[in-house]
Length: 258
Image (cartoon, rainbow, N blue to C red; front, side, top):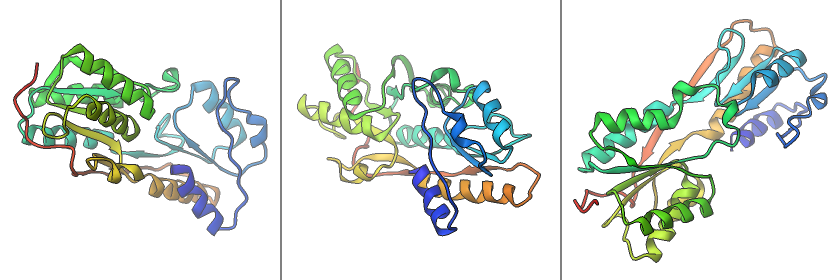
């Protein structure tokens, strides 16, 4: 959706563009020769950043900030997101909360270690006295991953009263596993997702989740790189806010944690 937001603005401006993807062999940087600007979405290794810079210094990094003295960057406020989720669950009386994190596709490229969501979860869960290491899990990223991880948790018979799950696809998979096991959401367990994908509003129950304005981030990424191409020298960093969307998967703690 970040890419689609950028493409919408690029098409409106009638500018030629193309997309290259990462692969097992890495990026084919030769395809970028001659471009005026680059929108780089995700995390990149130092070597990859050097290769990008050799093509053009007009780069905006989206969802990472490798060097704010050289490059534009566009981030979403991940810390505020975790803080909002923590405060919401604490306000409902939850003191035993679990977390299922998204497994990084390329963990060695995750430069922004200080902003890693696992670290933020530990920080804010501890601030509200609801952090328990036994309920912290590293996941995958898909519906199937969420389903299988939640089935394993259910079988372990060690359940908190709520889970914060690193993306909506995994959260919806977890909802299916809980439904099949007769565990009612939110009566028995509260669930909070992340991203507010289209399906989140139509899950059963509708998913409480963190909304990230991804399409807007893509639009702004184009505006930043276009501005650099036109001559702006000073790099900018923009922080996009997040919003907790409260729907039907969270309620007060039932006090039946194990």
